Length: 199
Image (cartoon, rainbow, N blue to C red; front, side):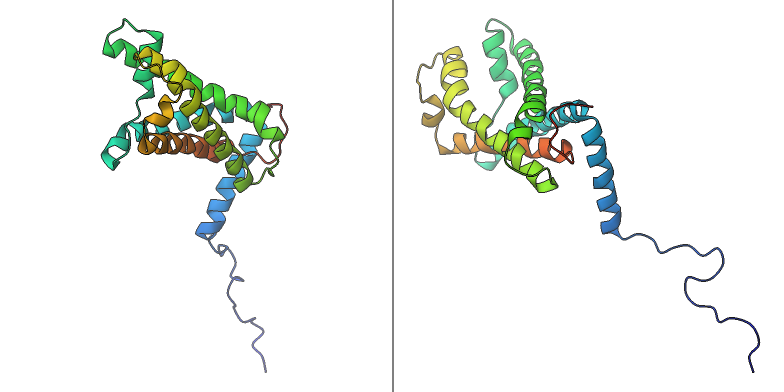
């Protein structure tokens, strides 16, 4: 003989809450929301990515000397080219503005022109892979173009291989700097498709 009352089982109590999402589910949801925003607002995502990327890589560049590598101060280096007669403070500020503007510019160029034609899928890892390729290309340009033909002459050095002759630790520092730059662009500018036009 039954009492007419249904047994209570987990999840059937009136007003009970569904189980809380796992940490992984929350993380995946946040990544999905961000990637949707990045897909809809390509230009803004690229600009934000470039600004964050150049800032983080610049900070790490200042600290590299403490790790046995070459300290990289692109702010002052740009300032000596743009404002050769300026004070150290003026060179740092003007060079820094130029350096950060370059960081945003290359991120936008990457997002709107380069990333869509790179032969990697628009997955999370694919987008990061593309941005690391960008960082590698920029590092090579820094070693073989800007070091010998821009920064070198500004400091009185005329050597077409100045970036190489600076030594392995200097070259490694340049690569780490630009890989960090590329990595952070890829983390922030990470759309779902490869359409070149911003929305």
